[in-house]
Image (tube, rainbow, N blue to C red; front, side, top):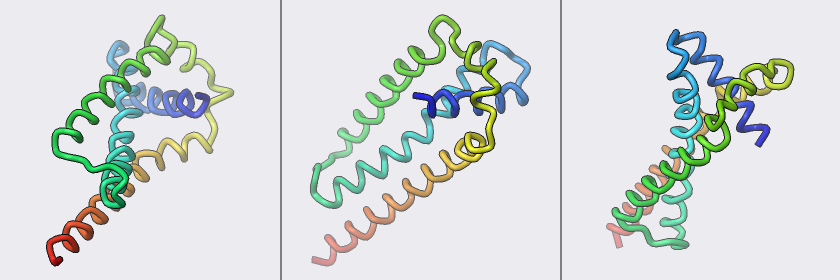
Amino acid sequence: MKLLRALFYQYYWWQKRKENDESFVPVLAVLCLLVPLFGIVGFIAIFADVIGLVILQKYDIKMTIFAMFILGLAVSWWLFLRRKQYKTIAQEHDIYDKTMYQTLAILYPVLSAILFFIGLYIGYLHNTAMVRQ
């Protein structure tokens, strides 16, 4: 929970420095938290399909992504946007304004993209091996 709040703090202030519209900044910070999560879930889904843990179809992936996005928005609203809790998080500079959290805010989307492309490559290798058989 503290990690999510710290990532939200970092993305909130990054958006705050870039945007002047006060009402849209918390929503962009929430989206900065949710979008990299798709890469991580994509890696897990592809890897689970390759090892045979779960057999996924095209519609399964679409429904999983849709459900994950709706659930992620609901959880994010509950944690950050409800009763304007983002304002209290944004004022906790002494807790969340640390270099460790700044580094993590940079590494989170980068590692998410790397994991997703590793998953795609594993899926490609698996499909290539299945075609050859």
